[in-house]
Image 1 (cartoon, rainbow, N blue to C red):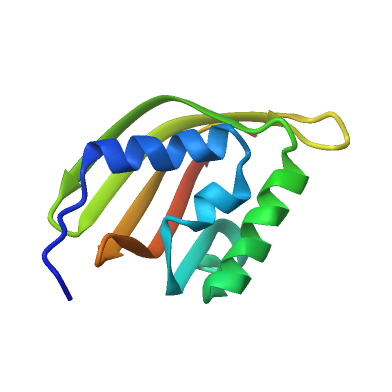
Image 2 (spheres, rainbow, N blue to C red):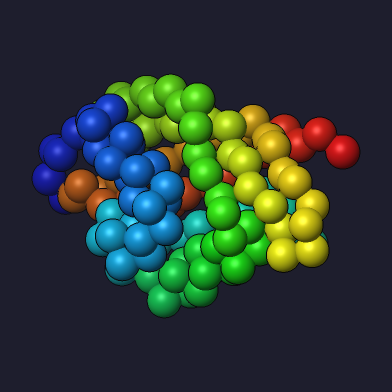
Length: 125
């Protein structure tokens, strides 16, 4: 493992790829042995995806569930191999329900790639 510290610029570029809905660009940020936790699911940690192929599948569900998803009003922090991104997610579900939620991603990196992405939302219901 190298000592490649995470930067705020990396976190901003990652979020920008989400806002472009560019799944290939998003996946370039992930390590092969990554794990992704969605904020909702049948377990207390949400829904878990292990490995790059499964993470891609999980992100595909995000874009299918909110085709116009956008992350705005964002702030980012980086310290060593850890990153935090705070944002306001907005979008509309396929059945027309408008979503707006404050959220945060807790990110862990190794060798400049994301090995863990854990998402949390505060959702108005």
